[in-house]
Length: 172
Image 1: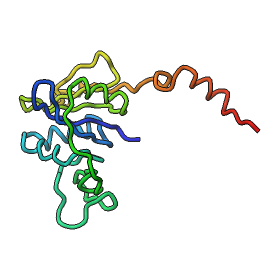
Image 2: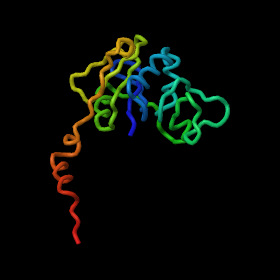
Image 3: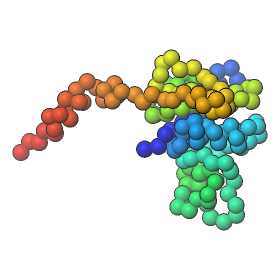
Image 4: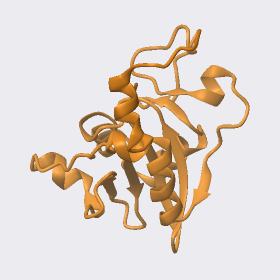
């Protein structure tokens, strides 16, 4: 299972153009790639135009030749729509509440937002006290905040653990 993330650009008051990224969503990978390689409005817009991603890398456009899920080019972002020939998967507009609420049920561990000042912010999910933080500053100062995975009991219910201890019931 990968570390899932949302990558978004603030486009208005409480409006975020958002894509999903399935793998490597932790700050030292996806976060660092965003800060280093997607540091202008034009680059962020080009990234979001790809739609949902399997993973993010430093390059958006592959060199001529084959680049898909079977044979991805090294260092090139892999996008569901372009590289997997999957219909849909476009960027969607969400409010901050929708981003955070969806993160809870979709297993999103990090939310990255390119704000109106041209700065990358991030929010580790799973911690009700977490706030949006400067991604670049936290990476530079080694003060990255991490996501707290949900408690299995919260997700599966109180009886789940007891069922596992008793084993499955098989009727003959």
